[in-house]
Length: 475
Image 1 (tube, rainbow, N blue to C red):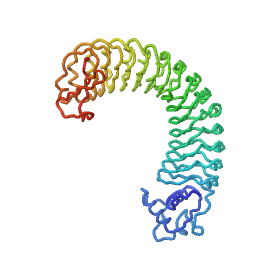
Image 2 (cartoon, one colour):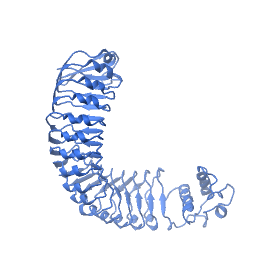
Image 3 (tube, rainbow, N blue to C red):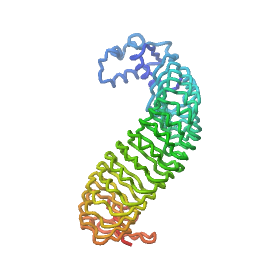
Image 4 (cartoon, one colour):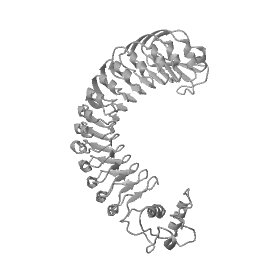
C-alpha cells in the first residue's frame, strides 16, 4: 500500500464511506481527530450522513460509515477512487499499487512524487483516469500502461520522464486525452499506434525532445481538438493528411527548427481553427490565401520562417483575430488594406521582412491595437496622424524604414499609455511634442555605439526607471 500520512488516508476513506459501502479502519485516535477537523470545514454541519460524528463518541461503533478492524488499516482492494492531489507529498509510488484492482481513478498530481512509474500500474484494468502530472517522476513510461483498456485520461505531464513513447499506448482505444508534455521524452512519435486512437481529443506532446516526422497517420484522429507538438525536434514537411482533422481547434508546431516545406493549402478547410502557430521553423513558399477561410481564428503565428510572397488580402476575413505574427520572413509587396478589417486585433508584428509602401492610414481604426511592430522593412512615406487615434497603443516600432516627413505633434496625446516608440534609422524631421519631453531618453545608435542623452528625469545606464523609451535618431 502507498505510504502516506494516516490523516490524509483517513480523510480520503471518510469521504469514501459517504459514497460507497466501505469499511474505514483506525490505527489510533489521530484518525478520529482528523475526521472531526475535516467535518468542521463543511458548510452544512448538520449533514445527516455525518451527524453521528461527534467528539467523545465511539467512532468505531457509533459513527455512520465508519468501522474499525484490529486497530490498523486493512487491504484496500475495494478502493475505486484515490485522490491525493496538491498535498506536497514526497514519496516513491510503491509497486503494491497494482493490488488496487478495482481502482477507477488515481489522481496524485501537483505533489513531489519521485522515482519511476511502476509497471504494476498496468494491473489496474478498471482505471479510467491516471493523473500523475506536476511531480518529479523519472524513468521511462511503462509499456504495461497499454493494458489499461478502460483508460480515457492519461496525464504524465510536468515530470522528468525520458525515453520513447511506448507504442503500446496505441492499444488504449478509449483514450480521450493524452498529455505527456514538459518531460524529456525522445525518439519518434508512434505513427500507426497513435493514429488508431479514434476517440482522442487532446494530444499534448510539447516541450520534449521528440524527433523525426509528424506522422501522417495523425490525420486519422478526427475527434482531435488539440494537437500540440511545439518545442521538440521534429523534422520534415507538415503532412497534408492533417486536413482530415475537421474538429481541430489548436495546431501548435512552433520551434521545431527542422520542419520545412510549404504550409499545406488543405489547412484552409479546417474551419474550427482558433489557434495556428508555426513559428521558428524553416517553412518556405507563399502563405496560402485559403487560410483566410479560417474565420474563427484568434491567433496566427508564422514568424521566423522563410516564407515568401505577399501578405494575402484574404486575411481581412479574420474578424476574430487578436494576434498576427508574420515577422522575420521574406514577405514583399505592400501591406494589404484589408488588414484594417481586423477590428479585434491587439498585436500586429510584421518586422524584418521586405514590405514596401506606406503605413496604412486606416490602422487608426483598429482601436484595440496595443503593439504595432513594422521595423526593418522598406516602408516609405509619411507617418499617418491616424496612429494617434490608437488610445491603447503601448509599443510602436517603426525603426529602419524609409519614412519621411515631420513627426506628428499628436503623438503628444499618447504620453499616458505609450511605453516604447522606436523610429530610428528613418528620415523624419521636426521635434517631439513637449508632453513627451517630460521624461524622455534619447538613444542614438551609430556603428554599434550607444549615446545616451537624458532629459527631464534621472536615469542611469541600463536602468530607465519609468521613462518612455524613444529611438528617434535619423542617422
